[in-house]
Length: 217
Length: 217
DNA sequence: AGGAAATGATTGAACGAACATTCAATGGAG
DNA sequence: CTCCATTGAATGTTCGTTCAATCATTTCCT
Image (tube, rainbow over all chains, first blue to last red; front, side):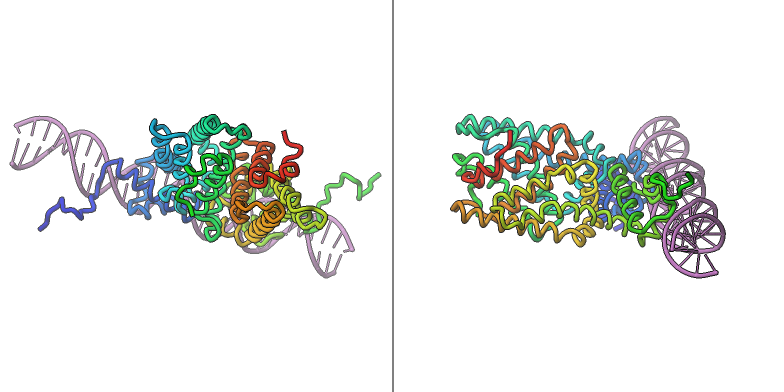
């Protein structure tokens, strides 16, 4: 009856890993609602149901907590496309499409998480923290899309397509459509964004149209 | 000799209009360096060479100052394309190109001002202020590009081009390329951005290629 | 196994720095 | 003299960080 290890026992004390994740989740929720400057340690710990002092125990400082939240999102995003884009059984266009779909996957592309990305983009100080922490992921993705485009150009003999131009355009589309989904959700959605990016790729690589545009509309 | 109205007289007192513009300029400079949350009234007035109390005299509050700075940028931006896009002597593609060129005009597309845009995008509270203050400008531009695309489609008989898709893609490219220019200036520049957007339009409207891509590369 | 020390996790009050805003006093122009 | 612009010290609030005290769990000894 007084079983202490019951399934619903809230566990007064828990492992650092669990507490760190709880705090990261609460930080993401708080940044979405109040922005980085409005995210106080009081709010984060309240959202997590923990006490104020825990943040500086499990993290060194507020900045360290913010960076941990950013790193968590960056890793979650990268995991979504890095596997498919290196699988040997997929052709270049399928890999490229996998990267695009990862960009607008519901787990990544939702108001809660988009708000965090743009919170870091919004101030020079945090933007530089972002570059140091996750800039390599962006560069890696751009390099991969550029290489995939080069392979597709070879396959299809697209002489008028410059892989570096396409890769830059894709990077621009990813961020810009994210921002518009966040700011104008009534005009931009995950679905229209996916359609627009794949539509662009269809114009670049029309002979691959059956691959890149299947299942749309 | 003791001329009081000399050219270099710093003018201890000035008209509200001048003071307001001084404070707006200083605010833009401060937001670029320190972000919105790092923009204190002390820093703004110090940057402007004025005293602390002047802000709440010429503006109601810090928020009102921020909104005035945003409105100033939005108007400056809109002025750059609204005229050309409604001139009767230009064909649709020339108008469309004028809008694209305004987006990456040096007066608009520089680190100082891009930083302010994304400062407002970075937090829910400021993002909503942006929507109320400048959201209509974005909607207006998207409507115009959509209408221009429809006219170009009629001209060229482009049956496979959907104007709403192109207008959404352009909006995405504008914001996303801005962000990448701000974050990765070594990989993205005004020049490459202009080239990439016009390159996209060339793929949509290949029969207008001579118009939209002239003078590039 | 029983219990006591040791280790680790948790709490929230207290502190000092930074901030927006107020306002009484001062300055200068007309 | 009157009115408007200007000044900057003072005020009250908010926030990150610290830390001594408390609680829970593990370890180790008998």
